[in-house]
Amino acid sequence: MEGLLTLPATDLRDRSSTARSPKRNRNIHLQIEVRNGWTMIRVNEHFFKLQSSYLFSEIAKRVAAYRAIHPGKDIIKLGIGDITHPLPAACIKAFESAVKEMAEKATGYGPEQGYPFLRDKIAEHDFQARGADIAADEIFISDGSKSDAGNIQELFADNIKVALQDPGYPVYLDTNVMAGRTGTFTDGRYSGIVYLESTAANQFMPELPSEPVDLIYLCFPNNPTGATIDAGTLKQWVQFACDHKALILFDAAYEAFIRDENLPRSIYEIPGAREVAVELRSFSKSAGFTGTRCAYAVIPKSCRVYDAEGGRHNLHALWKRRQTTKFNGVFYAVQRAAEAAYSPEGRQQIRHMRDYYMANADLIRQEMTALGLALSGGENAPYIWIHTGQDAWEFFDTLLHKAGVVCTPGNGFGRCGQGYVRISAFNHFENVQIAMERIRAALATTSRRGAAVPIDAQIA
Ligand code: MLT
Picture 1 (cartoon, rainbow, N blue to C red):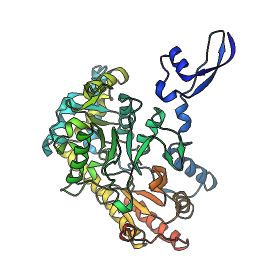
Picture 2 (picture 1 turned 90 degrees about the vertical axis):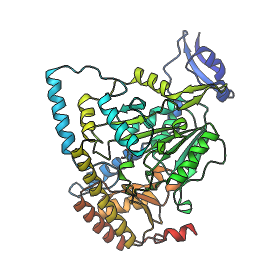
Picture 3 (picture 1 turned 90 degrees about the horizontal axis):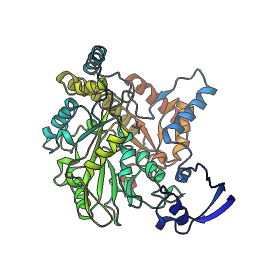
Picture 4 (picture 1 turned 180 degrees about the horizontal axis):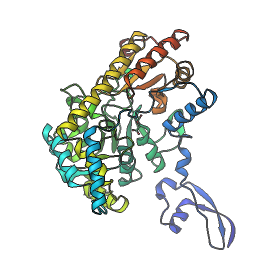
């Protein structure tokens, strides 16, 4: 048979094992071209719902366009959170000796879950030392928290309800859009998603959901607002997940920047979290591994998910099954370098690097406050979230064109980010000083209607 054929989506499902759930598609009719019994390669149309480009690619595009017109102009990047310091000396030393070792004997494939030498150190230093009951074999080494945050949703049914912070790291949302868990994008929001609004009015700490949700993405210290969570509030989220059989994906990629000793660093410091939470951590920002790539996911063996009949399943086993099919582990020498981050010298060098970036954050907070801009973050996080009082992309353009400084427009993180920009503390101190001087000069000549609204006034 040849020509155009119109089919209800359920009919198509009968013919193709890869089609989506009949419930969702019941009213959709698809027109397919049939040629001698052959169909054609078809695209995942959920991708068409995504915004035209990924936030940081859009920024890079705008910066490249600006550079093309102003080739000699010096640009200071305080946009994407990318490190400017090399790997700590202890990590480099371990890296080099691992490569030498590889010249002498083949290392071959490593364990998919990561080498025990690294997992043991993580369990001991990052969890057990703080009283969090996490064992080495509950840790999965990966090539980055971005991959883990994007991949984990594969394990869940396509009709679960997803809740995420607005503003939030775009990967959580985009990957659920790609998977078909949302409707279309209207007025800055996808239908089907529960947005946990984090605004000045709630001091960037969202309320517990008031409607049923299944998967909750929480990021603390928060990217982009820099907000932190205290143990009492985190306990409420854990209790909520226990009560409603939900799961929390706790992204703690910025944990190393917490300076306040009273704040929890891991969700597993909260009793009951082992059953209801997955935690993501990264060496990217803490130890300068953004380009080197090393991170880890923690999925405790008691962490549970349910099937449609309410049967309980082990999430750890499912993730392990996924990883063994799709992942072959992280480069041996990179894992040796990450292991060295836990040596006494490594820990000291990392603390020094953290303090260096946080001194930048202190300066940014001080300068922006002096300009009368309301802000949050930068105290226990490397990001400063600034209320601009104008369209976020417009403010981004002002800083780029008038100051030669790149920031990140807040609405790239969600609708609640409109009117805000995020300034990253990752750069050399001298560059941050110059950037602040240039911003001061640029804003002196630019009208900033409504920018100088103190955060307390916004809350009121
Ligand atoms: C950011 O700037 O938000 C991060 O660098 C992005 C990332 O870690 O992927």
